Length: 418
Image (cartoon, rainbow, N blue to C red; front, side):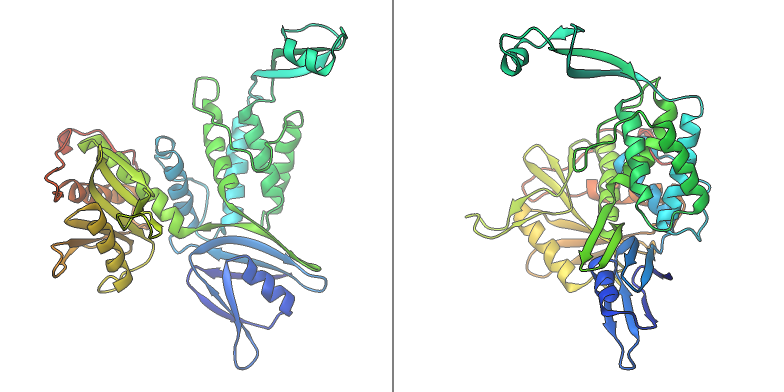
């Protein structure tokens, strides 16, 4: 089996493969493929990271694309975007050399083994079934519909105390997902088999169904680290591609979406806690009054009731010396539609002081911010606070202005910790 590993936005040339394997690699979205003049295969990765296994009749290959920020930081960003309360520290026990799938598998197996060590969590689950005796409550309508005139069996509903509860179902579903992914180390795969055996009486989640909520409480607190990782594993976009005798399987994360989701969550906490209002992601709006042009969705917008106070666009790329023209045009359109005099572009790039551009003829200012995702978590906290303060200082053309709800110095911690 050939193992090919790249970083995001990297170009790699390798020995040629069969056309079927090359097409399957391109279908994973992890890389674009092309041929060089001397017949070698050129792979070019983008902002999608993850892993895939390609199986053909005469050739097998594994493809891994790793993020530049490192696997540990990627897991932290993913986790914080989903639940900032539970991700105050980064996952431990991982090394920079870990690829995405092995890292998630190792972290999940370790956390789940620790969670299950005292025994499986049990709880009450509502069960509806037909029994030869009455247990719990009789479902009269179902009984008349299914068995009119018959006394037995009886359609009943009752609460059963067992291990088949959402917490265990979520863990088992993550185990089954990892079993299908490439690159899981043998020792970790053995640990996953032991976890699956311990959860043998649990029903896995139905494919495509919403993942159940499992809010922390005094009973499931020991499960929470494992549950957070399980949600990340189930959140990854699945790769299922087949063409003839060639199969590609694995999962990926889009770093553009990861950055946008993390920035939305971090700014929501920083802005709403200190300055009030409502910060939303992907707010739909029309550029024209007659609603004939397609809808647009700014990444982040801040509202005081019906009044928009600020608009922010997240860009997982480096702006170079000056932001790309398309980004400027896009932000100008948002500001014009929302009647704002200032818009904010936030790039995932080396940290630097914000730069303001005054656009001619429109009265619109565009402020460019940079966030260094590789910085320590406490430094990320400082960067987000600066952006939140810049957003809150905006004045809206309609006359509405943002004022701090509480002094910045008195505000509580924004959910970060080293």
